[in-house]
Length: 83
Image 1 (cartoon, rainbow, N blue to C red):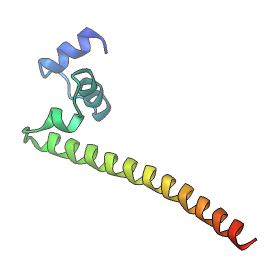
Image 2: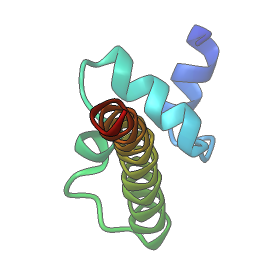
Image 3: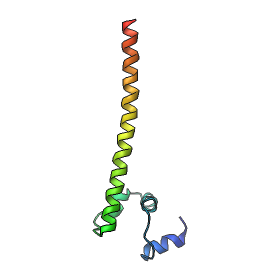
Image 4: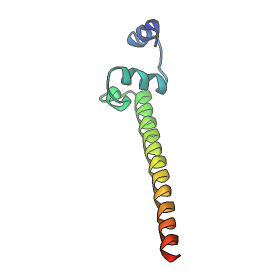
């Protein structure tokens, strides 16, 4: 991120997008949820909920791909045992 953009965020001259908040959080060594912790404005509460929902969806998708691979492996193992 450019220094000018960071300065505008610090001075509250801009409303950052969720992706921008995630970049700032990574740069600070924390999650976006941690960055927003304790902030209660309606916009940030909405952004925090969106970040959590995206994280849950990503975790679910990763879990489904692992589960699918495990199920495929189990099916192959069952087929090998039957043969």
